Length: 285
Image (cartoon, rainbow, N blue to C red; front, side, top):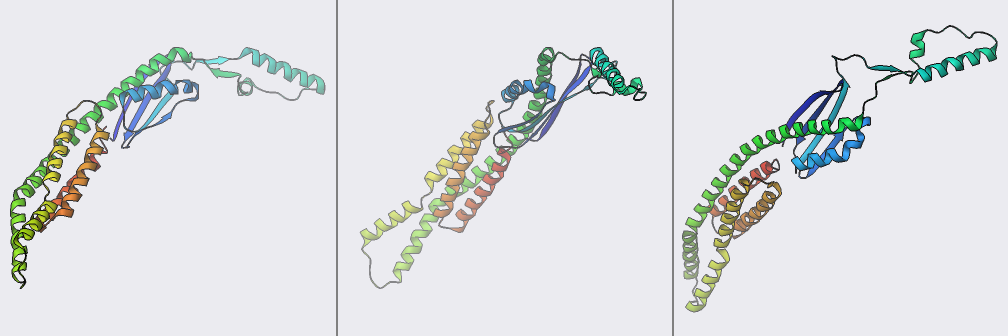
């Protein structure tokens, strides 16, 4: 499902924010981006995400920046500065002359002389995971709302499928009777008289071959199971995938056994509805 959610919080002079983007995917695929200093959280972050979401591609990002309302929090590494000055004096002594004037700002630009205040990453971890939980709660809510809308669309298509199934079931006696009359009319044009018993056996065999009652019954059963699955609270996307595969198989068999144009048309309509449902079920967890 396509969704976006975020959560932000100021923690110890730092502004942290989680961004979670979700798109459709057959399985759970997590693309995680963390600041280098918080890479150690990756395993726990993936575990927390997996507890909330079972399907979809999720892009999850942790952003970190200095809070605007705080002081700079810069620290001077006095030991490094003194070592730098001593080394400079030693070089000038070796040269026997000053090598040039330099300003305090130039010293501060030396890597490591001026650094941001260290943050206790281990202490921040529980708060960052709690913030992630807030973001995941929002993404789950958005996905649930979208899922409810998709469930309504799928139920509507299930209702249409049942209508087509009922029409085919109602027409089957008429189709078989018309087929029997058609065969008898063809035989009437033949001069040779067929054996009545053998003819009746062949007609019964043909009727059984073209009978689609079992396919219609299985379609009804799959539809009932689909509606039942949609109302369950646990993840149901993969189960719905399987049910649609089975329904598509029965619709294909119905088309192959078709003895008239109306049954063929119903088979096509069923497959169209199944394909529409298949596209929507890809969005359901």
